[in-house]
Image (cartoon, rainbow, N blue to C red; front, side, top):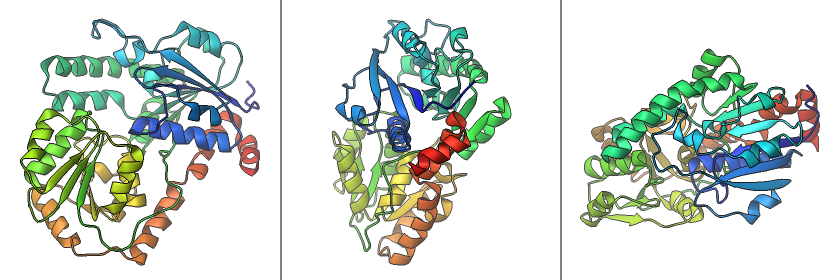
Length: 385
């Protein structure tokens, strides 16, 4: 099968602009890198709550939208809900109009991966997580009984469904841990580092005057992390704290309202969060789930001053040396006290730049994907163009 065409179908599980949460950030800036490399992108977006975006027309050769299905009973299905709800006959009809390679963004988008009509197409799946691990963790942190049961069932279905990846010519894993897991099981994985907004390290020298925790607070994991930090780490009134992110729980709002040194900023844009990252003296990063590479870790290192993170956030990322590691309330508090009066200097910024601009440069990191899709010679030609 020829891979000489510079056209590429990309199936996105959501509308990837605005690029304001982890998965779509990776997708959008990957689209930009592909476009800048001369690839003509035919983007297919499943839509549920996010509007059509004019910005995508400037990056893609064509953009087509499909409604994500909503099932009254999300548990009644043999396929995982995140896959079964992204099923459109219009999509497969559009894919069959030509023979271009296909990039499936996330296991969510792979409804047609094993379809016999696509048997001779070159197919790449970008994985953003080991999804059944991710949903198992969502089950553990969810308080709502129905949602907890849904996450349990979804995790079990995803574990079985993951075998569909054997129909991909290539799996593009987002982290070293994920790459090792997927390559061992399927033998066709490459490491494709996350794509992001940053082109250079832009850390402000000197000091800030608050500690920042940020994340999409509608995600149970992030909401629970914020509550843990407020209860156990960020409860010293001498350190001003900002919690930033959209859709915080009522429990989190109530907790913040009782802490005079803490402010909650929700309903804000990605640009506003980036300003907070830059202005903060300390970015604190905490997770209970070591999956993928958290894009907020990259943003904090590219834009922020001191970064304190736990092992699950930084293990096997190659970024541990750029952070201060803390793994319990006592060590977090000790790290905050050690950093609070310490300004960021040129040497620290230069050290970050050497690591980040080499390992997480979007144009460099798109090359393995270009080689898989179009061959090494074509990839080199696109880079020169």
